[in-house]
Length: 236
Length: 401
Image (cartoon, rainbow over all chains, first blue to last red; front, side, top):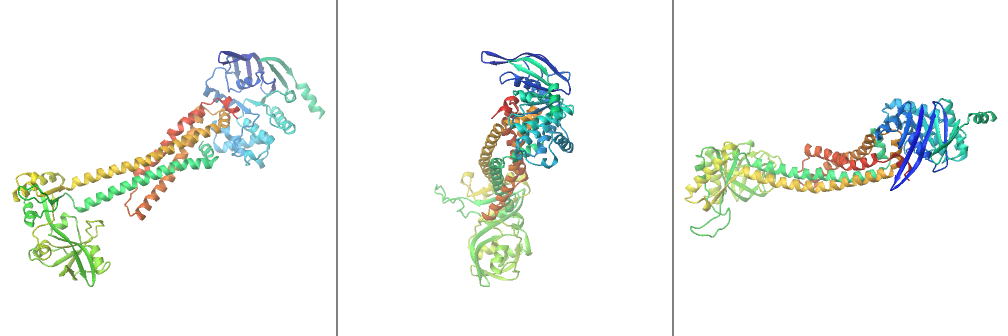
């Protein structure tokens, strides 16, 4: 599904060249639940931007579902994001004066989906993200943080994307609602979705089945975490 | 997409409303100003048309003594006579000639009295000056020859003397102490001002000269040419005939003036066009200011909604889609403003005509102009902010605080 080889990203700031990613390679299969973990400044955000087709690498290859995404133009990247990627952000990024339903249906407008179909799919996505019908017509700024993040997750799902990219999704939440959101991601994973979680917290990363650790722009660890997760489930 | 645009505007109603107000005022003033200009033009044109068609007016010029350079002013000469008018009839291309000797008199009937214009003329006046008879009849050539004391009243004069819509035919009126019999009423023409043909009394020119003015001269000779094409030729012929009759060798010394109706119309319409242009350009400036207001609002909006733009980009909006979103918002604001402004401008023009008594007319072309202009203001002044929105880098836009 995802194939990353020798990914390098450099920023040129005046005369100084900063190498944020120094040749990262890995692959992610369909249906995996992966956490990309690293301290701030490690390059994990840059990696997320490239994986999310918001940015392109300086060199190296990024293949998403067999398509090379590493050398595309602005609008071509937008079309990749429209069709294949669902984002969940730390700051939720909901339209404040719009209803929950409209927020979730927003990506479908750009995908050119008809109105009735939009509503139907938005409702389905909200149910998979764990928000029942009673809240669908609330304005998004009337919701609690945990509910907001689940609306954002529903929005990420609505296009039926190849991957769901979550950038510090629990960063703005208290630990209890954070757990609820992480549970939502686990549910999506069990429904067969590919989820990539970007975080600096080992606790959050531990919810994933596989943890990629990034440090100073390099991949330093690729750990299978499924056993541990299994135990967590059993111990409950 | 339309829904998105609408929601974009409605999310900040106060600001959108205030910005819209700039366009509303601009469009409303354009419409109102143009309607005043159009109305002035229409009423001046109607006035000129109501004088008659293909009309040449011969007026007395300045009186001069032989060899003297002392002029007593234009129109003061008593140089034109009924015989001059008769002589003009023989010119080719002239269809009808009506001499007029007019003066204001006190007129009484049944205890009512009024001061009005008494016009002594002949039977050709009706066709030359575009006047029609409502009831009764106009005087005949026979009555002119016999100096009959008969009078035809304009509807306003009839109202003043006998009451509104009274049948005055056969009644007696006294003009300057002399009895006249009313034999006809003219159709209302709706003129106004000094030359109101509704407020006049028409009597035979011979009667006027013999019993009222006591002078051989006439104040105007109206000449109707056959058609538009023969007017210039007729004007020259009239000048030459009168110069010969008055024994004047040089046209510079002429004791009369020949005025062409189309000259009047052209001069008047160029004045009103200038007036319209002036009014419209004042209003246009307010539209420009409104447009700058739009640009200001859209730039603020784009900055304020940077994060939203970042999100839209992240979920797959292409550049063109971002441009359309913001351009659409600008155009919707200006178009709504234009429509509201149009209604207010229409109302204002009605109010002007009601309260200020001025003629106004809202032309369809100025409505189309207002809508077109307001939409294009949105496009022009919204384009730069929309481009700026589309050029944002999604990563930075998402992080924008």
